[in-house]
Image 1 (cartoon, rainbow, N blue to C red):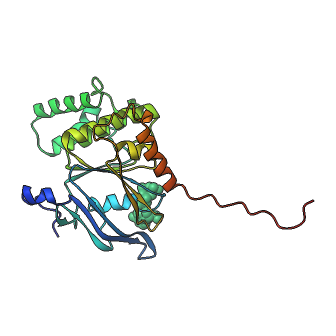
Image 2 (cartoon, rainbow, N blue to C red):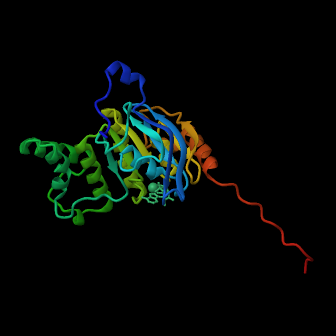
Image 3 (cartoon, rainbow, N blue to C red):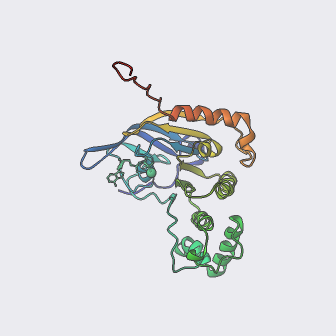
Length: 277
Ligand SMILES: Nc1ncnc2c1ncn2[C@@H]1O[C@H](COP(=O)(O)OP(=O)(O)OP(=O)(O)O)[C@@H](O)[C@H]1O
Ligand SMILES: [Mg+2]
């Protein structure tokens, strides 16, 4: 079956969600392992959604189904109105592992999607230069991935994702392994680019602060089988300044609320029975 086709006319697509999970369930191991159950979720075009929930609740599985890598066992995932039944070429994927090609320079890595798209050589060189500037890697085009720091590799992976220029970004804990400063630099850059280019984003994170800082909405899942526990609209402006957010009381209040939702209640200690010595 073909994957999602061209979007419907502009007028109707404005009213439609770009991504829809309709009663989505997914089992593995011939039904023995239920990963997600009855997920219903609509994502508007240009929306930045963060997904949080316990390990194993099916967050990556939901991204994989959006990309068409897995099909749901029950229900359906729709993209621009069409059921995702094959590889969805309108999404780009970025995971914790950067998958840079070790035998290619940084510029060569960023150029891959442009080469696949058949762009002329000179155009590719200019576009790669522009993207490297965008992510703060000017001057490192001739370096190989093994010569770069973890943060630089992540930036290169981000530049390559933007070279591919997908309509929707699926990001699975992309900044998890980075130090706090580098993570902030990339968060600022990602948020800026997504706003500028009108990208739709599904961003999985275990970091509550990151979920609130980046998201327009934050979707909280239950433990496995993952179901939507709560969808929280982040009450912060779209053009929020991530560098000063940690001093914003509204941001801190939202982080606190999300923490409370995610932290399991502490079991009261049971006093030992019997005589005191
Ligand atoms: N290809 C697969 N084959 C078998 N089981 C799978 C497969 N992919 C995921 N699962 C199982 O489905 C459940 C959900 O996995 P998933 O990776 O989606 O969780 P997650 O929420 O992304 O977890 P984490 O936060 O640890 O990354 C897990 O129990 C996992 O073992
Ligand atoms: Mg995962």
